[in-house]
Each structure stands twice: as C-alpha cells, then as structure tokens.
Length: 469
Image (cartoon, rainbow, N blue to C red):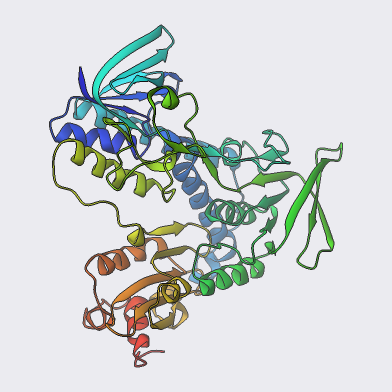
C-alpha cells in the first residue's frame, strides 16, 4: 500500500514524488519510458523538449559566435565548421546525464519506480502494464502527471519525414538546407533561431498578427525585427493551407498572405510548432469518473480532481504549459495531500522564457493585459545597448520594459528581450512576489558593470529620471 502513486516522471511528476517522500508519504512513480533502453525517467521535458532543445541552441550560439563574432573580441578563428554529429553527441550526453540524475533522486528519496504504462482501475488502484505483464499498485492517492504531446493541424499531420514535430526534429541527425516553421510561439521561435544559425534557410510563418503572440507587443516587434535582420524570413497574418511533396525530397508549402494573396515556398523540411495536446487517453479516467474538458483533466487550485484521492498537474491540466509550472503544482499537490499548509500557484507570477536569439523572458502582466484589468499604467523602458557590460556581448540589441500601476507604483510586469534575458527575469519574479514598487527597485543598488543594470534603469524610466537613457 502506497500513500501516493505518481503516473509520469517529468518535471512535475518526479518533483511531486520527491516532495511527497520528504513529507513522509510512501511513494511510487510509474513511467512508460523507464522500460526503454537509454531513455528512463525525466518525461518529455528532458527527453523530447526543454533540455535537448537548449543543448542544440547552445551549440548554435557557440557556432555563430565563433564564426561571426570572434574577431570582434580579438580572437582569430579559421575553418570554423558545424559538426552536427558532435552536436547530437553533446545533446544526447546532456539528456543522459539528466535522466541519471532523476534516477538518483528516486533512489535517494526511496521512491519506488515501476516501469510501464499506468492506468487507473479505481481511485485507489493503478495497473502498470510492463514487459512482464500487469501489476496492481494499491494507494491512497494517485497523481496524474502524464504531460502532453505535439499537436497536428487538421489538414496536416507530422510524418517524421518531410513534416516534423518537435519530437522528430530533436532526433534529427543532419541539418536541412531549408526549413519552414509553422507557428511562432516559444517552440517555433527557438527552432527557427537555432537552425538559422546552423546555416539553414529558414522561414517562420504565423497566422496571428505577430510572433511570440503571448508576449508584450513591443517585445514581439523587437524579436521580429532582429529575426529579419539575421536572415529569417518572417511571415505574420499568414495561414498555411497545404504541403505537397515534390518528388525530389522537398515539399511545396502553399499559404495565404495578409492580403489574401497566395504565397508558396519549396523547402526540405516543415516543422509543425502549433502547440501541444494533453496526454490523457488510456489512463482510465472515464472509468473512475474523473472530469475532463477536451482532454484536459479538471482540477481545483490545489490540483484535486473531482474524484477524492485523484490529483493532476502539469500539461495534462488546463494550465500554463511550462516545466516549472508543473513542478510548482506538484509541490502544491504533495503538500496538500500530506496535510501541510500550502499556497496555490499564482498564475500571474509565472516566468516565461524563450531561448531564441535574442532571448525573451517575461513575468506578470503585459501593458495591454494590465489595461484590460483596469489599471492606470505607467511603463519604463531601457535599451541594453547603452550598458558597458552589453558591449562585451556579441549582440547589443534588446531592452527591458517594466509595467507598473500608476496609483500605487506596484510592479505589474517585467519584460525582457536581449542578452541573458532568461537569467535576468528571476529578479522580476522576486519583485512581483514581494509586491515591490518601482521606487523600491530604484533604491536597490545594482552592481556595475552588469546586464541587470538595465532593470534598474527601466524602473527609473517609469518616473522619467533614468540616468543613462
């Protein structure tokens, strides 16, 4: 008898299992990939998402800097080439080390691992289908953390050959000469940026009016400007209508442009980056009465489903689809079921990071969202190019934008596009958590020379007295 059985070992599932064990709950984790050689624990984030993508982006960044920017820093290079088999080796090494790390955490915290496909038989019994047959696990609680899978378009399915999804492209063994990316969210923007720096002729197509449509509008405009400057063909307000094989290893992509006119490209590969769908089929949810909506498991603020003893977190719920959100939700669920006081995840204080070039990171409300909620808004913006530390970066493009409440001066949102944005955003998270004002941010001394000075100057800009602007 377990106190908790977790189905899924991604960043939500394994974090919940560790926290539950720390709180004294006898815990097991069920993972279908654990029986696959050289895969194991870690879920989509580690094996088919966040981690291998960032490894490839690191290689792309290093290649671009060595080839195109080294001379700017007084470093002579010659014969710089992309060794994609080496990129694959590095990517796989990072993933393998991560999987071994999760495996170690399970052993350290005495979490039992069951390899196989988990299914709810009742709210207190999980059947695990493995290579040796089916095993029954009895438990007081079940946590569903099965995540999501890439979504297709109604008229276009990823085949792993010419039309790829993110799972397929992360298993690629070569660099295509040309790539058309459908969808300019985080996944599409990252892969477009990555392969463009590898030397692939890249087209980024978005049906909405701007790239990275969930970001502040000024951030989106800057990313689009820089993408075009770096040779990526960006097409917004453009809908792909068909993809047709040409017979020579390429495909023709037909689309309708902003004015309704036809557009077409002949490319080697197409990447579908149009979102993800919850992985909830085959879990036995209907049999035990767990409520779902379009495949998403419905939960309350503490991650409980409508069935006592059954909980759900991460991408399988209608949440913000980010690994760190799943982890936070997993901790809330584990602490709640252990009887400890806890605080639900604040959806307005979730950092979002896109690791393209330039990097993008944001937390809190955009200017438009703040106005929608009735705030009288004041903003401050500061360009990275002014800072001494930025002059030591390959690119000086981008800025920090702070959105604040004019009445109380409270910081409502922090938005960054530029060098190391995904690291700098942590300061914004702390500020929002503490309900800080821009005045308090101004009075916080920031070290010089650092990139973080841009946040300080943006806060000063809210009041119109930034020193270096």
